[in-house]
Image 1 (cartoon, rainbow, N blue to C red):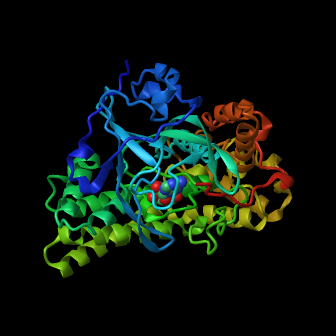
Image 2 (image 1 turned 30 degrees about the vertical axis):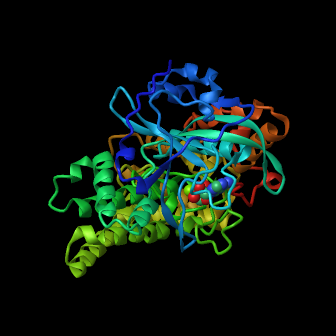
Length: 478
Ligand code: AMP
Ligand code: MG
């Protein structure tokens, strides 16, 4: 009936890594949203949207073998044993192009990893993950994706009573830094090697034949994460909970909780209501990336070299390269944002100056860069400031002096989005759904964020929130 092509390799690892268990049933499931274009890309029959019982876990797809994965993690710097407390990986689907994806239900009930949680998720946060992950994908940022959200028909008790929901999430894998942190703490000393070999085979098969495959794995993950975080910075994305359990080995963005896009450019911006110290503020993301990767490197030490001192030296050298890769990626992305294919250090001063101007005049990050891209910079109200006019003159001069193959405006238009999922619009769309089951705004918002490099959108999607509607805080809402 369904054309999922399951092949569940993770379950061939020791059962220390997972617990096979059925999702909890939902009494009255109703589909809320289905991602047909993603289904098509995965070679999955869109007809599954008519079978909501499968999309919430009441029934099992042929070939699926549901399991909750074990992992640990440093949450806000503190180590904890975790695991999928409200999620079930149904299996690994292999596409016609031989790409492998975990198909996971989130909000599908209690597992042995639930601790005191109820195993459930609520409609607002699951739709939030759907919106933001799809926005990220269309901004060309590696991310897990969202296939469907369904209501369960059950109430979930948080501060208030909320509608329960299940998200179907698609990921290159669910291997996290936290999975490695877990593996080194199991009794079986082979587990870390088994896991590292699995990660190499699944994500970086080219490392297998290297002289030191585990050091190569570390290097790969470092490069992927440095590039990913540079991409976040370039669109003003703030993840909000960069715990090690929320950092993937594949380099995809995962676990959309209190994440949000920065509107006014201010590097210390924090949205998450639980991030009191600003640990995961916009400007801290690159440093936290390194902190998390250091936790990852620690787990690989016994594999990198039998001589621990040597292993630590190798790992430290690898971690030092993170900063270089990050800076190079950051300069590349921000250089492109002002029209340079490959910016040189001298011209990069223009980026530094522009960001300082944005901060000083409290300008909107996204729409200011877009105005540069659409050659409407001079028409903006901020152009009255002397320092902005001066910057613009210098920028035009440097543009004149460079000869590059791509037209600068074409380049800028392809990297400076016109549309991001603005917090106030996301909140409006979610509250209409949760309170009134009205999907009008949700559908319109999805249509805008899936075409972010076009200016052909209603003004509300292109402009910052009016001051009265600005959102200053976001909630996990787990
Ligand atoms: P997250 O904030 O979604 O990354 O979750 C952090 C950890 O808490 C993971 O181990 C989750 O499985 C677990 N968790 C979050 N919410 C719940 C819940 N309602 N019931 C059980 N476990 C949960
Ligand atoms: Mg998580």
